[in-house]
Amino acid sequence: MKRLLITGANGGLGSICRDRLGHLAGTLRLSARKGLGEARANEEIVYCDLGDKDAVEALVEGCDGIVHMGGQATEAKWETIRNANIDGMFNLYEAARKSSTKPRIVFASSNHAIGFHRQTERLDAKSVTRPDGLYGISKVFGEAMASMYHDKFGIETACVRIGSCFPEPKNHRMLSTWMSYDDFVLLIERIFMVPVLGCPIIYGASNNAASWWDNREVAYLGWQPQDNAEAFRAKIDAEMTPPPGDDLNALYQGGAFCGDGIHED
Ligand code: 15L
Image 1 (cartoon, rainbow, N blue to C red):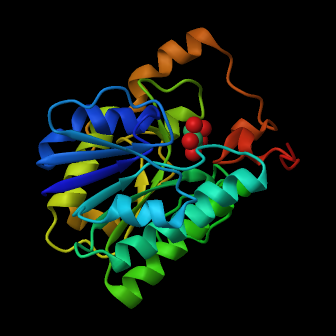
Image 2 (image 1 turned 90 degrees about the horizontal axis):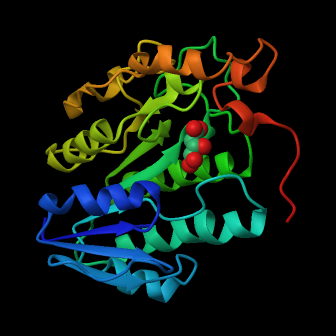
């Protein structure tokens, strides 16, 4: 690619993209609302609020690919989610539709789009969504946005329902949901290399023995995650007791996000 846009490039996963996806494009265009520091050799920095339509249009123009990590990354009050994840998604897709480059997009969806499924269920790309909060709803919305812009305008998006992408799994639930940074980077590489992408739903998790998710529908990507959270089980067992059977973290795939209450402030 000539120019790859990474939104949310100051966040946890956005910074991994910044550090490890430079080989995919001549130029990385990095965006966030703040905190991107100095531009490195192949980088350009554009500060932008995703809720600002004109700014997002200028941001997207000239990009052949977008890794959309920007937006609200956890549960929050509706106004925050609406600006970043609802208006922000619309602005991004409108900008992509109007651009001269028609970028291929990676959308950072989340396991919280399906969080209210029980941990005893096995899901694939056809499973119904069961969002576990306002954040999860915004991810379902984002997937619908991607689907419509693909069907109507041919814009390709990989909707990655990211599990728990951290250096290591942090608790027993993450033995099922963990995705290593290495496997995440391998996935992004495959998404941009495959000749025809379409608009698939992909479960973003490593090759975990305790996985709840089946990615057979996206075998055509050639993504073969290498890591397995099982390697951390003994460490987690030593550090904490497993949650009791009636705990949200033991019942639902979305874990604690399934708790009652709505963020009001
Ligand atoms: C997410 O969607 C969050 O962005 C992340 O911080 C984790 O909470 C993750 O889900 C998870 O479910 O572990």
